[in-house]
Image 1 (cartoon, rainbow, N blue to C red):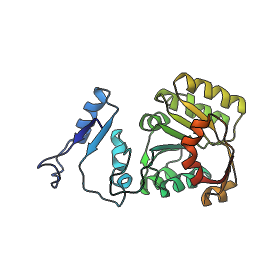
Image 2 (spheres, rainbow, N blue to C red):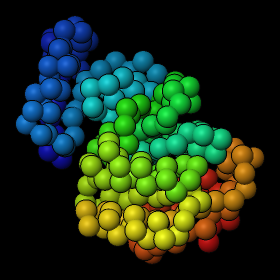
Image 3 (cartoon, rainbow, N blue to C red):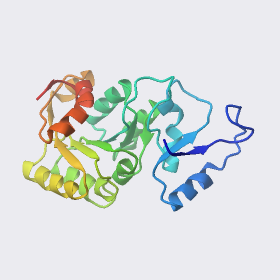
Image 4 (tube, one colour):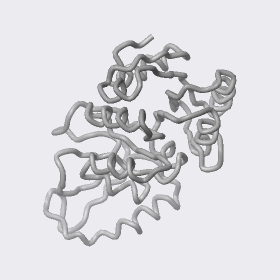
Length: 232
């Protein structure tokens, strides 16, 4: 796999000196519009790769997968909306081994998820920039449209073949409009509202009603199976 490798003196597999100027390195990668993998040699500070590298989000980097000694490989997932429902849902995904990049209007739930190993994103645009799979769990139609299509929204950095899963309960006409706009960028939207309330979100027993492309549904199924028990 083509990638950029970052390692400080004295050498590979040897203790680092802590002398790498990461802001400089990452700013150069930004200047050349590098969007691929970055390999870092580091001494883990937590049992999980995601926890050890959570600091990297501050530089625009997030871990895409775990090393050979970690748990099962999972895709990096963006999660926007850490309210009454979204917060426990995001916790369950983290517990199941899905590395997360999270964003929410309230800083407290973001801080909690970061303490559990998630990476922090400052805007929905940042979430989409670092993931190919984004989940939104928001209060109403206006919030979803703003987060996905507005200024600093997902639409500004969403990549071709990305999957957006809206688990909010919103106006179906708005869902169709958002899906059409995302499709123009090569991304797919799944409409996946839920029932079961805060208890279902906490216990991972939500009912999830999914509408959209069959291949996209199969791609999202592993996450749905963590979040709910009745998936239709």
